[in-house]
Image (tube, rainbow, N blue to C red; front, side):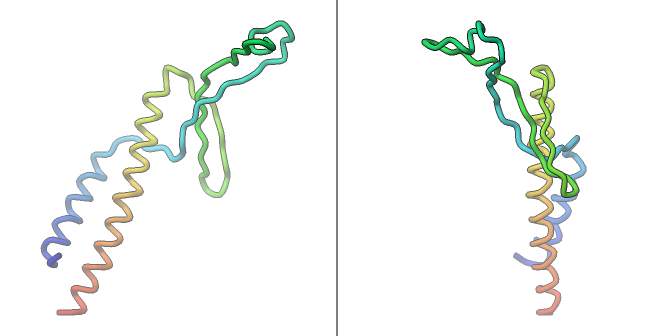
Length: 109
């Protein structure tokens, strides 16, 4: 890429970052649980039916690992925030790579 192309792409990344919206680190998983009630459907020896699904968000922030449940009505919003965070990380890494390439191009001049 030319120096001008690198600079243009960096500007595009800046604009995309500004438009991202709310972000949250982590991943979301589905959980099914078994309760302690002896007569419950989840304890049926023939056809056990676990409770759930429950949605769980797991992430590490500032060196501390956290897991918490997400209500079903909040799931879509949290999925969007997690996707935005992933995109933030991708764009940031691309920006860094382009900045290094831009510095190399400056050294070649």
